Length: 300
Ligand code: GLU
Image 1 (spheres, rainbow, N blue to C red):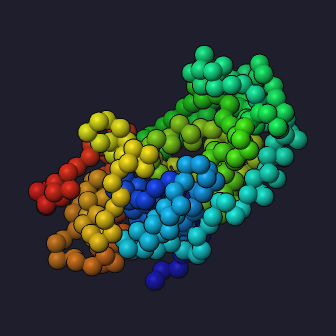
Image 2: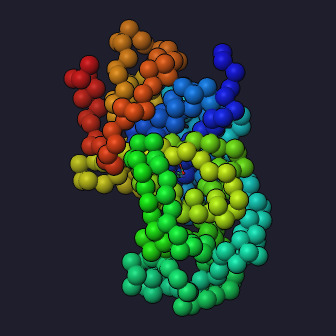
Image 3: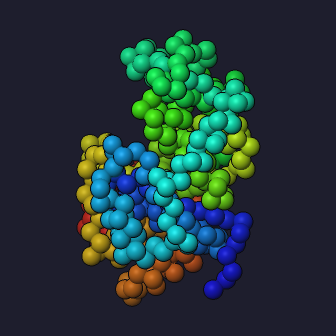
C-alpha cells in the first residue's frame, strides 16, 4: 500500500434523509475513486443536523450500503450532530467581526426577491426571532471547478445565506464549511446541484480564515420527469445484494471505461476503477439522464 498523501483529503457527506440511491452512489464513488487515485484519505461525514428531514434508520442504512459496496472510509464516521459546539464558536466570531447579522425577514417578504437577501436587512431581528445570515461582500467570487470549469458569482446572484435558522438549527452552509476545515478536507467531489452553494462556502471560508479547497462538481442524474434523483423524490434505495452491478452502473454514469467482465469481486472492481480513473472523462454537463438498469448489459 502506498502511504497516504497528506495533500489530498476527500470526503463523502450524506444527509441521512433516506437510504442511498444510484445518484448518491455515483457521488460517493466519484469522490472515493478520486481520493484513492491520488493516494488520499477518504472520510465519511454524516450531515445529521436537520432532524425534521431525517429518517431514523437512514444513517445506518447509508453506512451499511457503503460497506456492501466496498467503499471503505478512513477513520471514524464524523457525526455533525455530535460536534455542534464548534458551530457556535465560529458564529460568534462572525458576529464579533460584524460579518453576520440577525434577520427576521419572513418567507413571504423574501419571495419578492425570489428568496434572495442582499444588502441592508429591512427587518433586523434578535437571536430569539431571527435567522443569522452571512454578510456577503460586494465582490465576485471566482473559482475553477475541475469539471464545470471557471465560475464567477457576484453578490447580487447569491445573496446572504442563512447560517443558523430561525428554528435554531445550524444551516448546512455553516456546518459544511466548518467541518471541511476541521477535518482537513482538500478536495470536494459532489453533485453539481451544490455548485452555486460553493460561492457562499468560499465566502464563508474566507470570512473564517480557513484554507481553500479544490472543487469537482459532477453531473446529477435526472429521472424521466426531469428532476434530480433524490431521497426527497423517493428515488429507489440501492439494492445492496447487487452491489457489483450498482458499481458498474455508477462507473457508466461517470463515463469511465467498463471494467472487464472477468472481474467479479467488488474489491477487484474498485482497484481496477482506481487504476483507470479519468475524471476528465466525466461529462461536463449538469445533468445525465437516468439509464435503465438493463442498459448496463446492452452497453458492454
Ligand atoms: N449533505 C449534502 C447532501 O447530502 C452534501 C454536502 C456536500 O457534499 O457538501 O446533499
